[in-house]
Image 1 (spheres, helix red, strand yellow):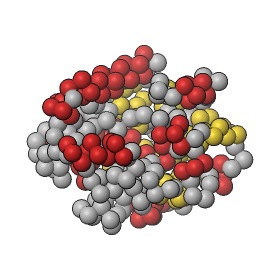
Image 2 (cartoon, one colour):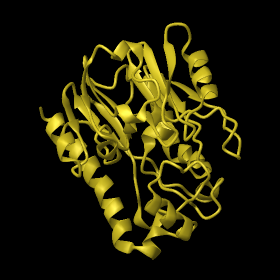
Image 3 (cartoon, helix red, strand yellow):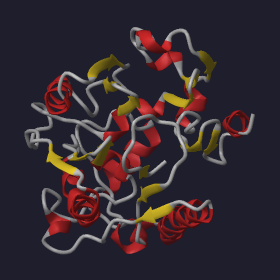
Image 4 (cartoon, one colour):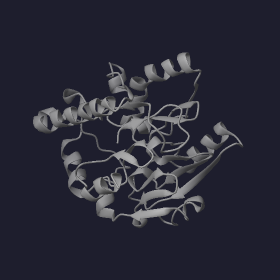
Length: 289
């Protein structure tokens, strides 16, 4: 799910405020970069053939469906009584910062904007073309600083070669009170990002690296903390299993195929109640159980 909440301490709880991405059909530009090994083969081939081209010029229906889907999600969440923020569309030269053709989209603000308690963090994303997403999120962060006294920090940008970090992406960061989990797979966040976050939060928090298989993009692609004591996970995507504090929780295991269909990637509305992707029937049944 393409969202991030303000004032968060856990992945569950009653959602009151959220940022949901945007995908204007004419803005979505296909990208291809070295770290994209999490993508399925057919998708990677599509990106290779069409890198730098607008999706609307290749498949207008697909581009318009992306735009509509995220707008419908925003409307659905707003009907639940949640305050919904949306990023601003990027303007030149923001659109071409580290992305000469305006590659990418603004679909996934959870990755670019990390919220932990009163900290609001500009993330450092491994994909070059996603670094500029911070500019569309910045007005929301500035509002949080001015109205809520949020503490605003920015992770230093990683190297343009996407090898030397720090890299820290919101999809890898999962909150369990004073224990913070950060996935490490080589696709997104890295150990330098873990160290940076620990230094920012201080001794009151434990920031723990969680080893993932090398083709896993983010932690939320294989783990969801649904409510206290209950999680959904994909064991096949972990190297050393769950963090110690989660090992006694009740667990619902899903296959890699289900996880690839977003079985663990949910927007928690309140403990035990979530919005999940409609393409995964078992995830729907879990979220309403």
